[in-house]
Length: 110
Length: 118
Image (cartoon, rainbow over the protein chains, first blue to last red):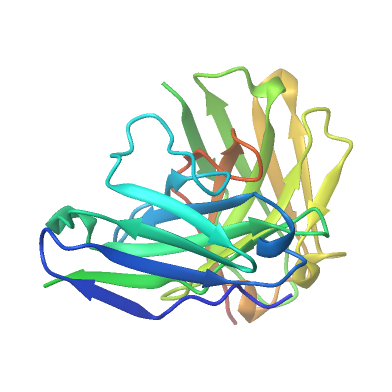
């Protein structure tokens, strides 16, 4: 199964909003409301930012929000901050009872 | 505090074997699915396998089926990944993670590096 498709890079200035897309198929993203988003700073373990499409774990700022339409999920970061500069990965549950990650997006704060 | 500590990584020749371990603490291990996720150097994340609380139900990514085996010892609060018939493309940092929310990993270990090379 191929990885979910994400843009390689997205950039924005401090205070701006950016959106990262995550495109799959009806066998994963489109078939379930089980999309998650992870943030990974260089050399660190991933951190869960969003689960079940729109839910934020305790401690994650409400600047981070998720949504889904059809086979495409999105992560929006509002009020961009320098500490948001990192790699972001989406993931989805699949019909094979497995998880599938996205290709990853590097977020740069200009 | 939830802690996941991996060990067992190292350098192994192609075709060789390795057993990774993950010691869990700070939560009731027996109530969670657990997963292994890997990341090749400079590449993205790849989900490898997960295991149900009782250790009976297990799922794998196609690329490791028949070569890797996930297991757990609930008495020792430990998760394992047996890696056999290793290939160069298995070179990666292997993370242990807790499936604390539906279909997602809410806590991760620091990872252990597996290098497959002659």
